[in-house]
Image (spheres, helix red, strand yellow):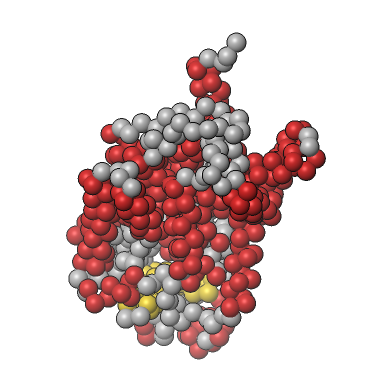
Length: 543
């Protein structure tokens, strides 16, 4: 008796739920942990930006990430104006709804990552059937690039979510007739449901295009890839002129609005800074020189860590198999579930946006997470590589069981290595935990938001061409200190600020290098040593 549609739907839903739970288990791990982990400075950055957006009037923050600490409005405006602002909006909304904590900053990217997985599996199922969708979901859930960085409050997670939303919509709008009647040369994995071009799919396409652009620059590349595909399809009369016009106009309008927002709100209407702002991702000045060999070594190391050796082997197997199969099966139609089934255009668009962005940003030589936009395509190619490897094993050993054994081994190795590499990421520490403890202890000792005098600024300047701006030297320090401050270089500076700032805070190491300042403070102010810091009460006489 054939399986009922309801039974298939329930089984599919159960498997999808299990895979979502697998990804959620990684994303929710240590969700309350302070921002001291690998690249947690990004989450601390946007958590502090979100605080400023909630505390300061819109006339000041301009709905852009704004550098501010404490409850007071800063004297000067400094915005993070060279990147789209949507992630800060999401974190501010999360803090407003659930309170100010580490987990509320991580919640928006986690939800984006889980929703993106649902969209990817639906997209793959529509083109290749259930079996491929399940394999893509299983690999997607364990690749460290997403299982770890999918919780990072930065531009990557919302950009990828909206990109997947756009591609799911694009599949419904442009590829609804992809399964034409054709000779079938191999059994399908499962029935592939038809794609209906509905209003919801069109809405998903245009919301996804605009949302991805307002989330991150890879969204612009995704929109560019979609536009090129739309032009190709229009030449074949596969889409209407109205659809092509919208695919071109909606991203153009979103990008135009974004640039107006960044320039008018972020840098006071200085349109001459636009080239510097746009090149800020790959043209940062003051970076340490690095050889091509070092760049290649770092890129390769991060690639292995993010996608694992078995995952990369499966990706290679897919491309090698497709090349060989393409030479031997020209003109032969294959079903959606076959190893040689064509890769859908939405996957190629995602792969293009991820690879192109990776090539453009100079930070790729340092940061692991610049591979994030490649996450769906990597999972897709690895899953398809399982079918290629299985097909090769069946041909080589002339046994159907060989195919299943190779596929099981490849999937199992990818899952195990993915979980192990993700665990390594979770054990990495970027920011000293003692710094977090100190600022928390200081808040308990002198009160939260109490102004202080600092020996050194927690900000530093950075220049991108003609564009110069302040940014946090250590975003976690700004997040956990979160109080107004001034800086002082001498005892006279400290006395001048003492009326409004009672406490002077300096690392012990700096005072050891400046014995004259230390001796002058010791002579007139009581102090306490707190970890690697010394805290002086500049209003109370020394005992």
